[in-house]
Length: 492
Image (tube, rainbow, N blue to C red):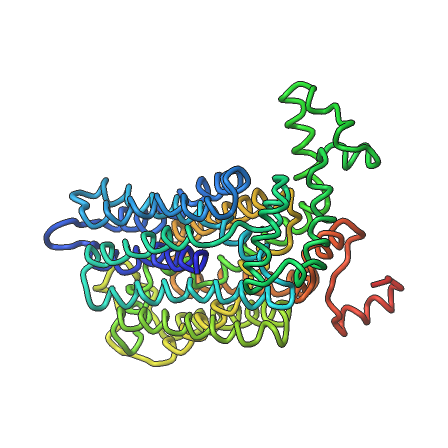
């Protein structure tokens, strides 16, 4: 529940602009924004998120997964208070920027903690349960947007970081991190707790495997690559120039196949996922619903989007153990492509080129249920993606937190770019062209994932690390890929 509440806080943070923007855009009294200010407000948190994501890796490695889960709540704590008391636009923008910073800081603790405390057989399910709380956070904020003002929504959201910090005090540190710090007794105690308050005898086999795995973690990273047979006490690298040692360590930890290959997968998956439609339109979703002439109130539609996101997360929990991550991720990406295509075709056929989502006076009077169906389909398929779940298990321990932080930072940079450029795309390409661009990204993502996304469900973290160290290939036992293997005589 400790990382679950971090995800719940992220869900509320990324949805705050969605419920606040409609009330602030050209407001007749109180705080008010014009089109440009609203565009910046909707995307600002995505701009600050990369800074938090880059910092989250070193924080997690230095303080440990448990203490980091406590500390990263602080920016959100301050942001919600500032959001409630915001007296002018700069203070509101600062609050939204802090929400983004805190969201970035939270990424590495979540992925590292859940991935390291769970057994391979249930790791995918528990990682997905954690993602469910992201959907709960989004749904809760959308619900609050229909019943209270955005200020009161910020005040209510304050309860999440407070509760999360309290629960973080009750959980154990991950055994593998404790072993990396030489705290073997604490690691055994933590493992007994995590496996059901059991005795050391019942976890001896698993603990021995972790100890064997952690032996390399005690060794100098440079020695592991250049002097494989050396013992820790023989290492002389700690005596070399600090800058040179840092550069060498960075080279042998980050610039190796075991890190770069999964990092490339994570970065590209995030890019295609973010640009596949729902994420760029989230800050201005209420107005976009009006621009399409959807046959319901905009805020009610947004609330239903939150409900569908929640339902999708539940579906993923039930399916991921049965079908695996690959058979979920690829169809989900294809589904977003088809949904964006349908929205693009509808806008081209039935909407005037004068329709502009930032100008309510241009919205069509005629209402239709079809774009609403397409939007709900886009929401469902987007909610079934497994990019964040995959991020928790594809990196080796030495680079896990930093690589997760880099991947998360890249995700937020792309998200900021997507959200900020939405208004420019709509001005230049209209609604139909904008969704055609998003569909193109989703189709490209489907092709990429089909050939390069491995199946990692139920596979130990050590085996995933070994896989990426070897020859470039895929875990997938796919008939189409196997056919080309036979034709080209490529060994699996």
